[in-house]
Length: 196
Image (cartoon, rainbow, N blue to C red; front, side, top):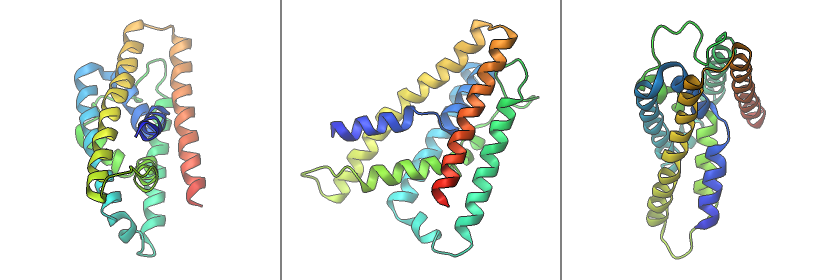
């Protein structure tokens, strides 16, 4: 169980579309909007978890055209988010965002996030827990995943809010934007390469 918990932590702490967009939301709009966005990511992540565990994702992707269309939509959407972060100017927030990121946008982001499917697939097919039947193992893994997921995402949100409060110089703010976007582009590239 310790190895499973460590694996979850390492997979979730690494920059992905969810945490990077969460940090950017916290930085651009503060705690209230960031927490609502985090709640949407949580619902979206657990929706993906259910799709993976029930095998629905596997069933859906058996339809010939679904997987490539899903991949194109998800990678395009994630690239658009990365571009908005990279070109946000001197503020660490989405470019020209007068409208705050919403709870439902966060859910949508996770549902089309390739990393969410990959992480859940690895965690539920690997790391067998000895002494438990399948239902117990699924329940225990789900609880552990969420127990690690929530504080890790609150840390990313806190970092985003702190970046806003620190009042970095224009050059440093721009560098942070570009670094976050670069990390997100790398995640997108790796997700695309893993599919092809």
